[in-house]
Length: 211
Ligand SMILES: [Zn+2]
Image 1 (cartoon, rainbow, N blue to C red):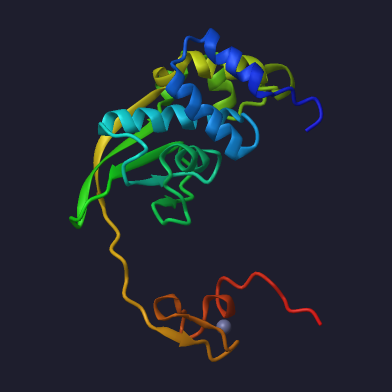
Image 2 (cartoon, rainbow, N blue to C red; image 1 turned 90 degrees about the vertical axis):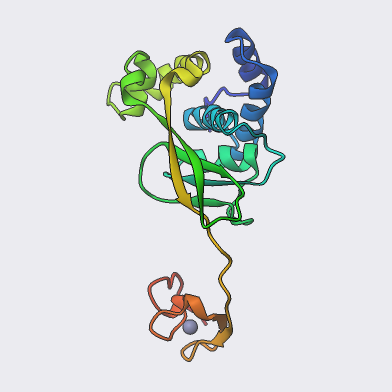
């Protein structure tokens, strides 16, 4: 993006100035790398995942599960730091629109204790730029305020977050059979059929064939 002055060197210098430990610096750099630029939500996301891991008393080497309550920025922090991905099915992204994550350690039980970490609106009021950006206020100008926003986030860290302990259902692998869609002739797992048709011939059709 033109005029987007964000390189890793600047970011590292900013994290050093904020007195951030090397582990969190690495989490942030890995997330920024996956996301392709240091969006504010990416920085907060890495800080949130680091906090959740500490609360769970675990680390990214363990098999972890996560639910993310927004598709914006935050899923990349979970994927880059905790290796819960949509592909390994240990990350579920729900379009709820809250900047919150819930994480738990792998469990053989039907449900397990998890920690939910979220941005706390009351606490964010103490940080003017963060608050202005977060509430999508028209007075937030990304051309002049992006750098001070980054600085505030790196200084505030967990000071804008809260957490709660919750119970989540663990997902068991469904048994399935392969079936042929009568409309398009493609093979799909039976549990994804909609009214005996594949989802692409139903509610999830997203393309038209061209000849
Ligand atoms: Zn079909």
